[in-house]
Length: 344
Image (cartoon, rainbow, N blue to C red; front, side):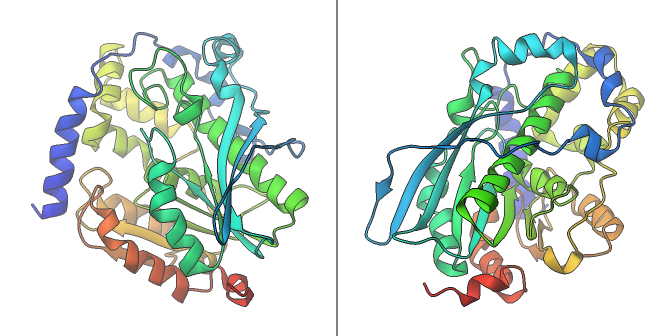
């Protein structure tokens, strides 16, 4: 076992002290509306550009950081879930983002960053990843908050993101659907209202999975950079140590492995195929990933016609050690080619 796998194993065991509370609501019998739908019907495009509120910005010598908020237009597919969505989870009705752009003018290109599971807020990325992308890639950057995270965390969660991905399968699928919808809504606002000519998406772990799905839906982003992610959902639920609670709770609800695999195979996430051309993709994967096995990444990678992929050393939790190599790879490929034309 390499050092990356060892660290992932330790974090996986520690996560058992985080996921102390079992899921009590079994919604596996309410999944019929999600089965067999084409991806573009499961994840419909926003009908209109949202009215985005721009809050008092933070201004530095060369950049402006703005907080954005807008009313999420997401409508749950399962009518049985709508009361919870609009009631106890009402904080998800407002979407939030943090936008870093050039002072006095916008750049030609924007990079949307979708964060990982269990993140409490954007301050870590604002101190590390976002300035790196802004400086090295010559793009403006926006960090989008996922449902059940950050300011969207409802009262009652033990930690940020606790209710995003659990054995309450309807709630979990609606969290993914709303995440996709809200990012697409914001992309439309940035294109049509602000006027960015190029909008790309990147994301880490869960955010990388969201990034991949966004690359399968029209109107497509100009490029995608999924990091440490894959969509082989049936295998991830069975194998990823960090998903132990979800697996155990589903078993407690009476779903054995074959039934769990059947459920996730009937929802068209793992079978999604890209609309973004492969030369406008850059995958980042870890050889020693203890949560998302390299073999499963390769399985989807081959199905997606082998787009450019950067294999980094280490595992899922040690990706920050490779950020220099990741950004260098993004600069080498013609992903954000237009950004190079912008004077920074």
